[in-house]
Length: 377
Ligand SMILES: [Zn+2]
Ligand SMILES: [Zn+2]
Image (cartoon, rainbow, N blue to C red; front, side):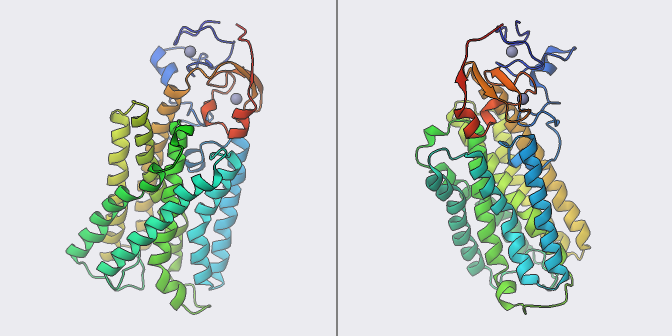
C-alpha cells in the first residue's frame, strides 16, 4: 500500500514502517503523522505521560519494562524495611544506588554500548561520578558545613546568599559540567542516534547523582549510629531514591540529546527548549526544595513539589525523544525482524508496522538480527 504521509510504498500495517505515521486514524493528516497518542519508544502510551521507565529506559520492550518496574518496587520495599528497622545508613546507601544500578543493568540488557562497554560506561556513569565527586567537594569546601538536602536535622534559617549559591548557581554549574564526560565519548560516530545520546546523558547524570549524594550524606553515613529510631528520614530517603536521580539523569539526558541533534544538523527550538528545561527545572527543584524546607513547610509538600518538577521533566524528555525518533528512523532498509515491543515477526524498515515502535530504539541484539528482505507491497 501507499502511505498517505510519506508517499512510499510500504507493507500493509497499522503504522507506516517508513515514517511511523498511524495509518489507522481518520481525521487530520498532521495528527496521524506526529501521533502524540502513540509515543514512538513505547506506543501503548501517550507522549504526555509522566512515566519513568518508558522515558529513561527507552530501549526496553513492553515486557522488559515491567521487569524493571518490579525490580524498582522491590528496591523501594527494601529501603522501607531498612528504614523501619532503624538501619538508616544502610537505607541511605540503597537509596543512592538503586536507580543507577538499575540503569547499569538496563545498559547491559539493551547493549546500548554495542562493542564498547568499558569505554561507554567509563565515559558516562564513571565520568559523571568523577565530575560529581570533584564538583561536590568544591561546593562543600566553599560552603562548610555542608547543609544537606532538606535534612530535617539541620537548623532552619533563611540565608539569601547561601540560598542563591546552592539553589541557583550550583545547579546551573552542574548542568554545564555533567554532560562533559558523555560529550567526550570516543568513537561517538558509532552511536549516531539521538536515543543513544539521551541514554548516555542520563547515565552520566546518574553517575553524578551517586557522587553528589554520597558527598552530601557522607556525614550521616559515617556519623550515624548503626541503629536508630526511624524519625523523619523517610522524606530524605524518597528524594534520594526517586527524585534526585531522576532530576540529575533527565536533565543531562536532555542536554546531551540536544548536542546529538546539533551534530545531526537538526538543532531546533525543541532541543534548545530541552536545554532550557534542564536548567530551569533543576534550579526550580533545588531552590524550591531549599526554600520550602527553610520556611518550615511540611516535608510531604516538599515531596509533592519535587514530584511535579520531575513529572514535567520526564514529559519533556519524551517529547524530545518522540520527535527525534520519528525524524531519525531514516530508511533502515527493509528487513525481517522480530519486534522488540509486540514480538511479532515483521518485515519492517524504521517502525514496526504492527505496534508502531521506532526500531532505532530497539536493543542492539534486535538490530543485529535484522535479515535484509525484499519489500512486499
Ligand atoms: Zn509513511
Ligand atoms: Zn511491534
